[in-house]
Length: 109
Image (cartoon, rainbow, N blue to C red; front, side):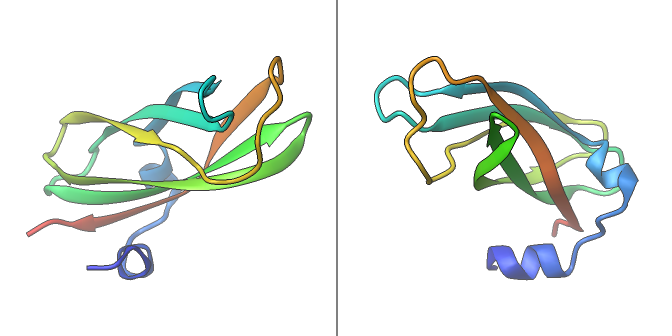
């Protein structure tokens, strides 16, 4: 199943967005790109797959976006994710701010 299909078939209401939290947003010292980590807590009554779009900002400008997929999250379960957006090199000392731009959730088989 492709990412586009997951996002297209998902529910994207505010309740779904509340399932996702960004826990860290840092610059990888080796490749100079953003690394985003977070958690997903399934608030639905069914095992679900998640696709998460993260926006990375520096100095109030969006510099890149990344995706994370978290498969088969049971109701009430919490799983972690890591996203490594591909984009511009982030200069050392740059303060990054990462936000959840969109969350797609679809029931898992």
